[in-house]
Image (cartoon, rainbow, N blue to C red; front, side, top):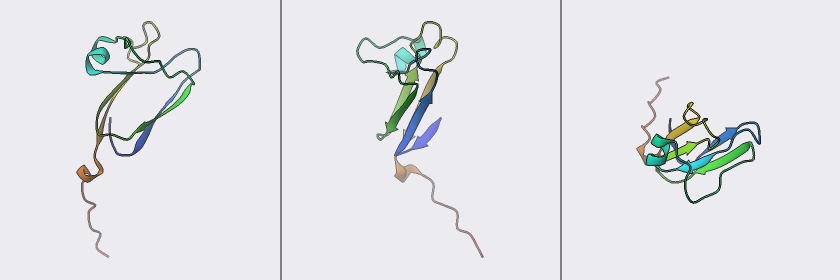
Length: 89
């Protein structure tokens, strides 16, 4: 998924059945929970994407990430957005 600044990622899930960890690229590929940092656990987690770069998120519940519950987001600077196409009337 690719988005532009400033957007929000919203993770909706049944509270208590899942969680969301922000991880690095290696942890994402290997489905490893980070050694530092607490998970998001509300079931309606809104994360502001206010810096450009790659962002990785996984579900830390055993077996969920391996089953595909993970998300990779690339956030671009607004200046990198293509110019709108002019419309002729």
